[in-house]
Length: 411
Image 1 (cartoon, rainbow, N blue to C red):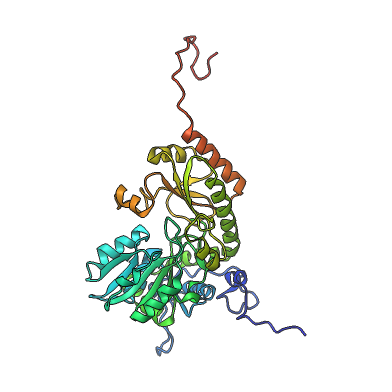
Image 2: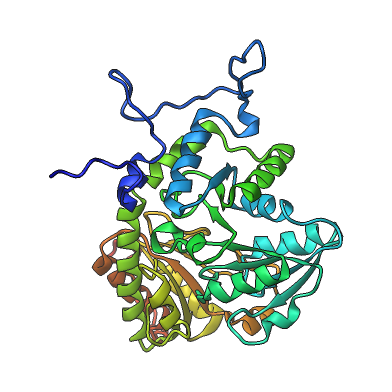
C-alpha cells in the first residue's frame, strides 16, 4: 500500500528547495516573486498584522524564515541584514546592563569588537575562555546570562562539543548562542545538541554566490521573538530582494556543501603532504585535535582550511600573488575559492603577538574552497607554492641589443 505523502517528513535537499512555499495554485510562478514594497494595504479594523518591510515581515522575509527554520529544526527564525546584525540581535535579546558573558577566545574579529566596544559600553562584562580545554566552567558567575561560541571556529576550525556548554548554560540559567556559519545546518543542526540560538551569516554558505549580505537567528520562538523586537528597533531588516536572493541560494545548499566537503578534504590532504606547508588546520584530518569530535558531530568537514606556510608573511605574499584560480578576498562560503590573511581582515585589530598566541601567526592563510574541480585547485596551489619558494635566480649579465629593436621583441 502506498504511504500517504507527509509534507512534514522531508529530506534536507527537498526542504531546501520547497520549504516555506505553501500551496501553488494554477498560474502561480514557479520562482517566487520579489515583493519590492516598503508597505502593504492594512485592514480597516486592525484585525490583521500590519505588514511593513522595516519590521521584517515582508512576504519575502516570511518565506525565507520558514525555510531556514525548517532546515535548522527551529521553532522560529529571524532574517536580518547581515551576520553581525544577527549576532547583535541575539545577544541583545538576552542581555542587560550588569550581565556577564562567557565567550570563546576564538571568535570572528567583528564579534569580538562588538563585545568589547558595545557590550562593555553598556555595562556588560565579558570573560574569554578556551572551550576546548577543561576548567572553562570556572568562568561562569551568578550574573552570567550568555555562553557564546562558534562551530567550527574561525580561522583554526576547532570543533567543540556543544552538549557540555548547553548543560552548563542550563545550570546557570544562561542561554547558549552559537555561530554556526561555517557548519551550516547541512553539516550539523546544533539545536539538536542543546544550543538555544543558532546564528548565521547568510552572506556565506547559505547564500553561496558572494552576491548577498544577510544574517539569521534560529531557535526557540520566545528568544527569537525577543531578537526580532531588537531588530525592529535597530532597523536591521533585510532588503526584500536580498531575502529573495538568499532563499534562491539556499535551494542548492545541499549540493554545494557536498562539493565544499569534498574539496575541503581533498585539498587539505594534499596540502598536508607538501614540504612548504608547516601545518594544516582541517577537522577532517586525523592530525586535527578535534577530529574525533568532528567525525561524531558533522555530516561533512566543510570547505574551510587553515594553512601555515613556512617563510612567514613574505612567503605568503609571494604565494597569493601567484594564484590564478584562487582569489585573494575576504569572506567565505561562495562557489569560487577564496583565500584570505586574517592578519589583514578578520583579526586585523590584534597584534602579531596576539595572533600568534591564538595559533595563527604571520604566514597563516584561510582557504574557502569553492565548487571547482579539485584537481584544478591543486594545480593552482602547486604552481603558487613553486613560485613562492623558488630559489632566487642569479643576476644575468646584460646582453647587447640592436638599437632599433625593442628588448621585448628583439632578436
